[in-house]
Length: 204
Length: 261
Image (cartoon, rainbow over all chains, first blue to last red; front, top):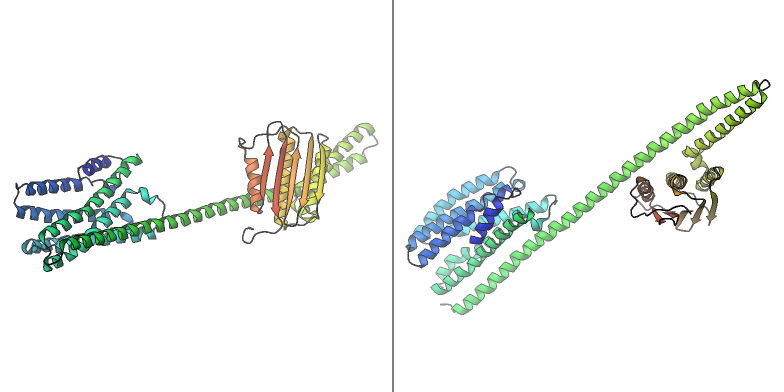
């Protein structure tokens, strides 16, 4: 996350940085804050409830911010419909998050990641349809979307299954292990973001 | 209660399979994209080649039309006028016998030269007589300069190419001979036309100063090669400094389907 922050700040200063990724450094900034809060929570400096609420708010940011990348990609969002979809889903997420906080569930998590996963699929569908003129493997947007696709795709099935894990009374330690393992999905996503930022800086 | 170790094991397997599936999907997208990109590049290349051919075709047509116009003008206008002047001079010959004889000779030579130029330029004459007689005529023209020792040889049974192809091939040979006259500093020029069952090969060999085809940057050779390509053939140049030049054009007798413009 911290390395990502360094590279995304550097990349945003590059003249050839795509407009979709120009403000990308905000994502690792929020990520870093959340990580610090989690560490503080583990150390006992912050109550668990506050940490839970901040996590949920960061989810809203995670969805809105990454959705905004898709909104900014002109060739998949010609009529700007995604803007309305993101807005509607944001409002919906606020209610679901509220319900989640009250009931201790993770539906908001599944919905946010599911939507981002669908946006990624839509992006892939669009790039296959478009006339291919650039080298896709060096395209920062493509790499970033691959990160979103892998990260959300890995986390999604488990976040959907979460309430069934609770029903089947899976031990807390095992659940903790699942949670930690799922974090690798986000790790892969951040690696892809990092690669994307490196691609921007290397282009110069 | 479930066995935690089994659960963790199962979880890791599912996670890994999922990761592999998602990665495979990305690889598939990249593969499809690259496939489409290659097709796109090929399409662009073929458009560029077609465009280049169309330009060349237009250039050849314009050039042929210009040649026809000049040829007609020489034959119908300048040639006629000179012939008239010659007749007029013959009619007043008695008074200034010697001077007029010289003038009449000069005009006679000019008329013959003009007819030769007209004949060389005219596509109709080339098409009517065929490739071999047209080359023979060019060789005669070269001989008239008395600067070259020429030889012209035809091997195999002469075959008529489709009109336009024959004309384009003739223009390539004509340009090659002009290059020999202008740039080669040669004394010997050999022309060989070899008819094979599948193709015909024309080679023009001179003993001139030669050149390095790899460093040569002129448009003339490129034009000849482009023209040869237009008629499904190819034009090869073998030369080096002070070693003379061999220009070889190979043209298939049958045109590949869809390549003839």
